Length: 434
Ligand SMILES: *Cc1c(COP(=O)(O)O)cnc(C)c1O
Image (cartoon, rainbow, N blue to C red; front, side, top):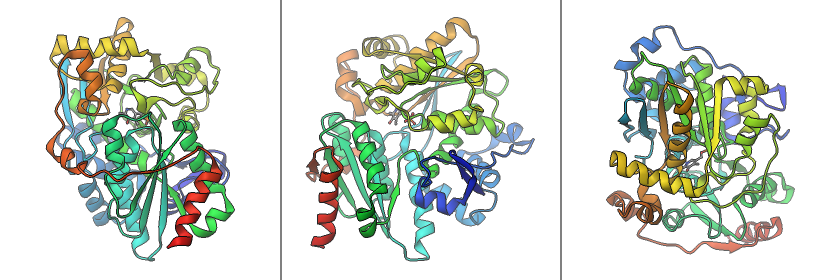
């Protein structure tokens, strides 16, 4: 398997290189040179395949021998040792629950697969890596759970102060060992910027070999494409299917488009956004204009300049016409999101977290003009947003025991201003004192 940079098609690298280095020096993003079609019988057989078998067959095609089969199979089995549940709300609407992994968010799929893949690549050479990850809420918890105790890897998590939920903060600060957490007095975009700047800083790069675990790392996106095939399997193959994805950095929906390019029959991909509607505005106007992020109750989607936009545009041939053809997009404010949580509870006796509720609203808009069945990609367990859910519905979703015991310890994070200077001081101070 070869990958190229979205800024330079001639700059190609191996999967190992792309996974360990996260992004190319030219500022682009790595993408597979080829998204091969799955073999013709695949979509007929799919209903008899377990999710891990689906994942393996997609890998066989996409990775085309980059990893030996038996290692690939063991990475898949240890990464996806939790269920995907599919719930039918009514005949034209189903919810695919992707939040039954250790951090209770869909990001476990990407984080665990990436951790196992990196560990495989580093093990033999006894190489070390420091992974920097900026999180708007869920990424950090998933990545920490994925990397905890993984040899040769140290993880540094940056999160925006006061902008993640109380539970999310506990999930970021419960680890110790090879996991370090830093609270940034700024926005998520500040955290992302610090990660980018640290990567380019010569002085830091003399002390650290960095890698990234954000959705810019292709090892996060590849496994996210697998569950779109699972959604197709669960939806019943005869009907038209559209998939609705609550979107922030647009990694999740980009993975869906990768599956589409590999032959997955989907009518439309619906990008549901909260008040951070940069993409929805682009969809309507054909004009892309990054915005400053605003805070919402679906905070993992508070992104003003989605970092996977170049990948998405590449997949759609960089034309607005193609975007209009295969995608739909709506944006929804907090008030409507709260009403949606209540509506779904009243109507279906079902709890949606605020992110999935944004997707529900887009699905409803879509059904005003389209008949296709819609599968909502549900990204987080409602218990992660207990206060919001309780204020909307009067019920308080319980935290599963496994997570409750994980977060019982709290290790106070370092706290810094959102400047490269402060970040460098902290990182260089660590190396000089150890
Ligand atoms: C990260 C996240 C999203 C947004 O996913 P992107 O890949 O960044 O578009 C949506 N919902 C939840 C719960 C998330 O954690």
